[in-house]
Length: 133
Image (cartoon, rainbow, N blue to C red; front, side, top):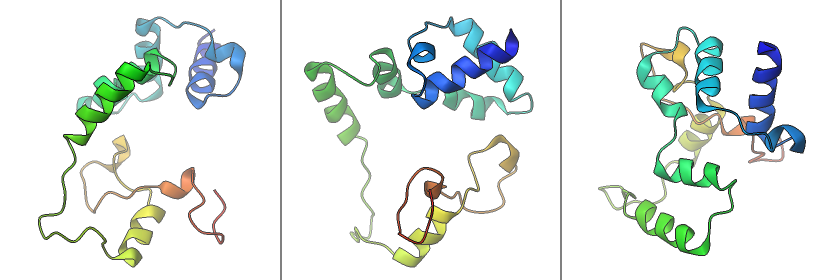
């Protein structure tokens, strides 16, 4: 039973398997599964799994917010943008490539922090033709 719940959770999160994605899972069940899956994760790391107001709103509406909610989200999120203090909007693309390649950081196994967090972008995105995503 536990294995089926974990499978349902991850398949639903990945957006695959419509039958799993349509099932409603109790929040307590999700919390139990996550604590089982990440037994050594620190509390601050686990808090990220809750999602902020925007993530919760999108999840609750299956990524199809109403037009009014979408406008509210855009206004709220735009207010959080922080531009570089030096005014340079384009950085070092070579350094950006290194960060996109790196999977380091933001994982519970990366504590204590010893280097800059990477993006792990290539796990999902094909940013260059040379990379398989």
